[in-house]
Image (cartoon, rainbow, N blue to C red):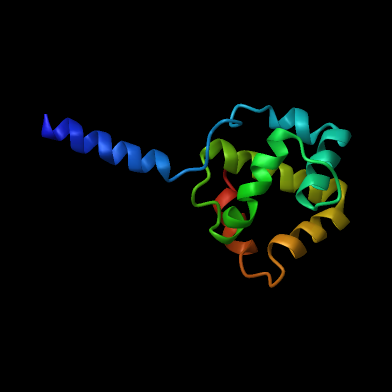
Length: 120
């Protein structure tokens, strides 16, 4: 019985060490391949546009996720961030530069973040 209690506590701590998974099932390809959706998310992240519920929830954790190389990101969140950044870099290099400037102005975190999401 004690084993089950300890196992439950370990599982609860492990689950608490990730960001909320509420939006992990979002079809990221539908977002990043739709120019309007991509622009809306980017506008939200850069404070130049309105945020919908999904973008606002990601924006809330983006500073910490950047600084901590997505340490609390689920595999789905790492994949979404990788795809989002790839597409912004490809389609809007100026927005990509603005995101880097806003979330990593000194360039201290970019390499670790890139490595953390590279295979997601």
